Length: 113
Length: 255
Length: 135
Image 1: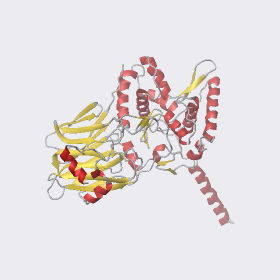
Image 2 (image 1 turned 135 degrees about the vertical axis):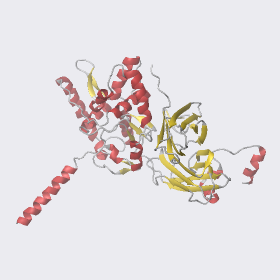
Image 3 (image 1 turned 90 degrees about the vertical axis):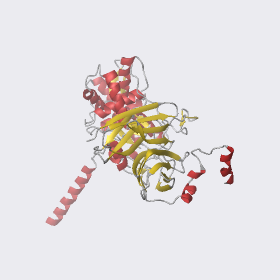
């Protein structure tokens, strides 16, 4: 029986990782980012708030960016940060958590060109 | 006299070219803003990539057993809707989502709605695999089925030109006569079906053609038909036939 | 005004997203715009639901940026995002997609490693999508 992964995530590293130059780390997460203001059903009740409120991007387990999100971020959030390529490659990872307790993570190896 | 004949020839040449130009059919993607086009063409920016990734997983776990090849199965995308006979004399049109619901119930024993997340995911996945194919809605060979098929086409053609709703607008008034004009922040397209299912920013999720047509009905403030109703299937057949021969764009972004 | 200054002494915290400091007139009064921050955003949004926004930061005078906030004063929750960098950076680039409720100036307020702040804003016009959609 297939269970659908509730929150698919795509972590991409854009650009050639040359030492000293920057690469772009792009994260795309499937999440409705429900603001709590939209009306659902008959138009009588509000759809409960459900947003990702915390995203941490780490390089070799050390956080390089900590973001607190509000309802003003679009659904299926996209975060893009630039990072300088260090001499040795390493593991880029991203962890997110939402206000209903769901979590997700992804990681990708950054190999120096 | 020679100059006059020359001028007349040039005039008719220009007029002929003008009428030829009107035959060019544009996909809905040509009406996207540069920003949206950039987001659509880059899979790392496009939210639809998440559905395609999920579809890949679902295909491997559920569909691959029966359907060996993705590209063979994806051909259905450009051929549906088709007439499905229920009895000797009756039947109904089914679209790709209805077919996937049927497959899903055969595989898992559960009947789910045609806009359930699993169905939409598979529809997006197959639509992406069908990119580059040409729309080919075939007329059925069997004379009885062909008769039903024709009836549905005529019914839909009538709906397409019929004024409806509080705004008293017909489909053709916008989608044939006001192409390219702005409707607040949206741009009116000629409504060819080469880019479904769509990720619509106003829905903030993926939706199928069924949902989009129902949104059109609510847009002119007409009574919205129930999801899966025959008139929506007939319209889908008509619009697909109208897009015959066009290149399939795959799942697309819309406002 | 004086009440809001007194409240912290009573142990009541105003640290919510709807603080008065995020209102447009407060932002205009408090911050002078700085060229150190560049905002890339379409001046006319396709849709209020998803507006691509890019931020480029180049710190002046050997300083570094340690955090920044994206503020949309006319949104129901003006604080859109708060990003902090454990390793302050002199040069930073960031992009995301935001939601805007109505036409407004979107502000980026960066805090440097010495506590000082720099700000920039950009106006974005948001129009409603076309037809009413009951689905």
